[in-house]
View 1 (tube, rainbow, N blue to C red):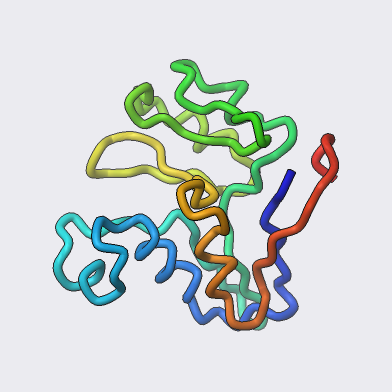
View 2 (cartoon, rainbow, N blue to C red):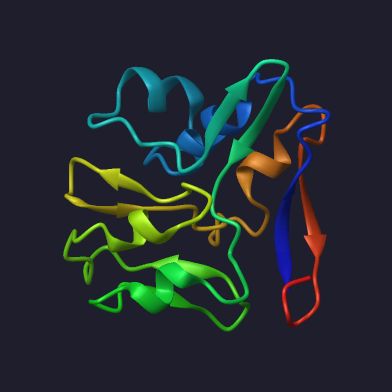
Length: 149
C-alpha cells in the first residue's frame, strides 16, 4: 500500500500541490485552460496550511482505520482494494459528518455539488499530481505495511 508522506521541514508553501491538483482534476488537463477557461473551475483537494515558518500540504492521509468511512451514513466513503479511501459523490447526501470527524481537516465541502470533497490519490494517473510536482519533496509517495505504518 502507498501513502503520501508530508515533510513540513522542506515545504516552502509554494502551493504548487494545489495548482497541480486543480489541473489533474480539470477537464482539459491543461494549466492555462483549467484556470482561465473552465467553469466551474476545479477545486484543489489539497490545501497548504501555513503557520510561518512551518507550512505543509494537508490532504487525506488515507488512514488504515478511517473514522470518516466508519461514520459515513450513506456509504459514499469507502476503502478500495489498495487501501485508498475514496468518495462516491453520487452516494453522498451532504451530511458533512465526515468533515466533522476527520482529525486532519482533509475533507471539505464541494459547494457546487453540495457533497464532500477529498483527495482521490489521482487514481486515474497512477502517481498523485501533488507528489509528482512538489519541487522540494515536501510530499513523497511511500510504501507502508498492511496496518498503515
